Length: 302
Image (cartoon, rainbow, N blue to C red; front, side, top):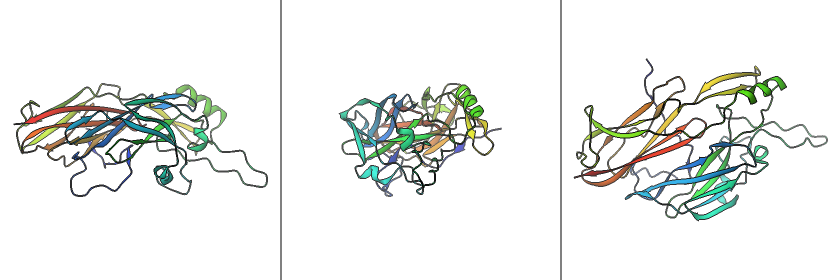
């Protein structure tokens, strides 16, 4: 039987400062970008994407007026960082300022800057090596997101680029079989204690409660990855990861999920509730190709 997989807290969203080790990462004590949702979550260079930021603060959900900018500095091939540090030092192209959401056009040369495309070989020089994809075959255009009072964040928009090191036959088969990613969705976010539902309007104080989310069948989408060594297409299904946040109490295990071999449509963690007060809990669902869904629940501890 497949069991629920617990994940390390590695997010598609990358914050631009050192973490505060005084409180658990799950506790939202100041304005924070929790997720950036791109629609569609995967697109070709030159196409338009809609970006929306989900943010929270100590009093619950925020209606953020964010600044958005594309990173213009690709990560050097010799670096292992997800994003070039220059992006956080101003190497960006402004999209919009102080908006709830925005449309943006991905640069026509994005697969050259951030993907496997290589510039024309210069006379007397060896050809450049294509960039390597992630384990899902993906490449990403970084977007810097700034919300007043919160640390800067980097969201990664997945690119559809041409295959590198693929035969003509494999490239044709890939184009026919590959399904672009779509954003996942969350059906429910619920509270339970000892197997019984807990009313969010009357949460017991200083008690261990189970937080659970469910998602529809088919949320973990199938896709194929080109294996360059064998020039073959390998079937995969998306892994799903849930990040948990709260304005009060503590969530010891902040990231849970299901591996690509686990078809279960739910995930859960424990929450040590606060002593009193009102607040919010959030669940941020991410698939392994960069899709995002968010659900929140307001609570009262009498």
